[in-house]
Every structure is written in C-alpha cells, then in structure tokens.
Image 1 (cartoon, chains in turn red, orange):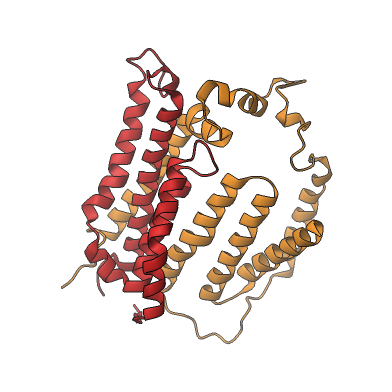
Image 2 (cartoon, helix red, strand yellow):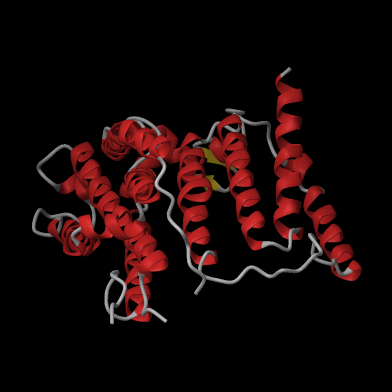
Length: 141
Length: 187
C-alpha cells in the first residue's frame, strides 16, 4: 500500500467547519421532506454521509473514525432495516396486507415519511461504513 | 438560448463519458467520471426529473467518486507514458452500430413534459396505465405531494424494501470481506 499523506490545511478545515452544519441540515431536510419535494431517504442519507466524508477530508480519516462510534453506524443500518421490516409487518394487525401503510390509524403521509427516515438511516449507515471500510479497513500490510 | 445550453451540456456529457472510457490513468478517469455525473444530473433537471437529478448529484458525482477515489488510492499508479488506452477498431464499430440502432428509437419518444404522452394517460388501448394511475391518484390515496415518493414507498414498497435489504447485504458482505470492523488492525 502506498502511503497517503494527510496535509493539514487551515483553509479546508475552516471551510468544512462552516459548511458541515448546513450540509447536515440539508441532508436531514431532504430526508424529512421527501413527501413534499424532490428527495427522500436515499438522497438524504447520502447527503448526511457527505458531511462525514467532508470532515474526514479536512481532519483525516483516522481521527474521524476515532470520533465515530462504529456501533452507532452499524445501529443505523441494522436498526433501519429492522424498522422497515417492522413497518412491513405492522400493517397486518390493522387489517391491511403487508406494507399497506394506509391501513394504519395514522395519516398515510406520516407512515411514508417514517419509512423515508428509515431508508435514510440505512443509506447513511451503509455509505459511511463503506467509506470507512474502503479507506481504513482491512489489515495493515 | 436554452437549446444552445442543452447542446453544450450534451457535448460536455458525451466528451466526459468518452474521456472516462479512454483515459488510462484511473485517478483522472474517476475525476472525469464525477464531472460526467454532474453533467448528467443537470440533464435530469432539464428533463424535469428532480428526484433522479438529486440522486445522480449525491450518489453519482459525490459519494461514488469518493468511494472510487479511496479505493484507487490504495493501488499503485502505473507509470505508463501513454495517456489514452488503445481502442479496438472492431469493438468501436460494434458500439457505433449499437448506438445507431438505439438512436432510431428517438423519434418515437414524446416531447419532454408532454401531458398527452401515451404513458401518462389514465387509460390507453391496453387498459389502465400504471403511471397515469399514480399521477391521477397518488395525492388522494397517500396525501403525498411528490408522486415519486408515493410510488417508491407506497405503490412499490416491496421493491424499496428489497433495495434497502440489498444495500444492507452489500455492507454486511463488505464487513465480512474486510474482516474485523471498520478500524484498521493495529499490530
């Protein structure tokens, strides 16, 4: 493996410090507003991940990984899949077929937005994991 | 004016696509590929598909490039002098013929945003069309303003669940492949 030097750049670090909160807000906005505007869980999850990648580019992948709790990342995609699966099943006791969220006693729009949030969690967790795995994972040679 | 912009955009996308295929250096190829994705995402906006445009910009131009970059960074760059790969003329001819065949279908497409397009009608000769049904009923049945989201989560929910599980399986596979978590093993 060739060494990949990390250059500490005050310009990049400051820019990321300024931009990251807005990018994170935008990612959450896209995830939550998939029902009313373009976007949704897939896109929002990726935008949220881009914040992690931005921080990693500014401060180094290793330190970013040290600040990240892997259990949270794994919990995001594991819990997201479980929650989506639960939504699939929970419609049955209310008299609907599998995933017929219009059978739930809450407005269908909110059920759809909840599913979008679960998708966002899955995508954010998965892409963050892939990024860390591809850049830092594996055994040192 | 708009047509000139569109043509420039198509030219940009085609040239970046060709450069992605022809450049020998993987790093350069990835950078050009990101530019290609960005151009395609703007084309999606012009074609009135903002959901696809957002996905293309976020996944294609953003995260995909980063994942490819961190992967290529682990490989050695070949000190080869030739900047472009050599093209097999026969393969090029086959590709050109294929493109020509596909281009012959273009005149059959309806104009962008044409409300009278057959696929968008609630019914046509073949009976009820799914797209027409979604556009006509998505808001009444789900209360969701964005019909794409309604199709994604409500009408085609199982597909989306399958996609989510596929993405989940991909990362589980990657975790197993790399063996032992995201953190680099320290001796």
